[in-house]
Amino acid sequence: MKTVIETFYTALSEKDAETMISCYHEDVVFTDPIFGTLSSANARKMWRMLCTNAKDLDIHYTQVQAQDNRGAAHWEAQYTFSKTKRAVHNRIDAKFEFRDGKIIRHIDHFDIYSWASQALGWKGVVFGKTSFFQKKLQKQTLQTLDKFNPNISS
Image (cartoon, rainbow, N blue to C red; front, side, top):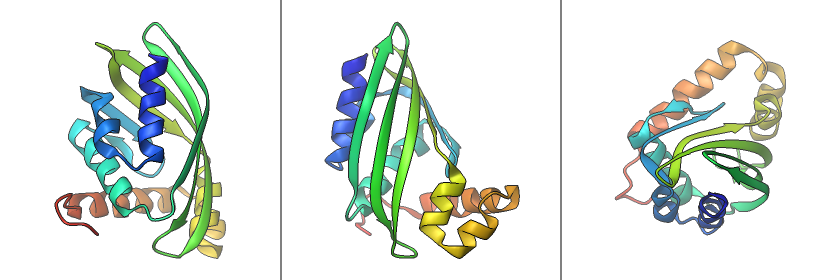
């Protein structure tokens, strides 16, 4: 299963959403602080959107571990947040569950306040720790995901 995780992050570093998606089980569930919990179809769409829209994405992953039906990794993403043109360096700890040799559950955990402070500047510093902000951010992110058409490059 370690190879599945390594393939996933190597593909992300190459902005290759289709290879990433091939690592996912058909019933995968993805969770993170920005998107919340996504079903299989939306998890796939999210990676397509992120890879399509990424202009200066730099990914590094380390600490890949896997045993039986569980795994973990640490990864870091550096990029310019498109809405504010601010630099972001996000540090993420990922946990995985596997079924049939593929990722069935993917949970990314990171400090949403740190992300918001970098991506949104003073607004993130002031509001980033509030549940209101986090709910509004997830709502806006899901609206963006709903509007994304993978056949039209953004």
